[in-house]
Length: 83
Image (tube, rainbow, N blue to C red):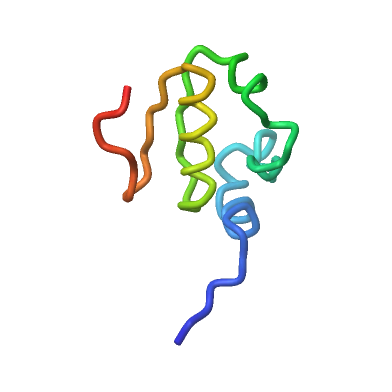
């Protein structure tokens, strides 16, 4: 059994750095932090969600619904038909 213990940015950055060395992916923050509240989401006209964590995707979905803004979900277990 293989347990994945490496974050995406830790594996992605070294492997993509050669493509655009000056704009390598950087870890940002945890979307579930309190600073990313409904008011934060209201600052956007649209949310494009490409998170790979189901709990975080559900959180973004709740925030977008509460903020009244459209969410485009790209997760494999995403929300079907919500606009």
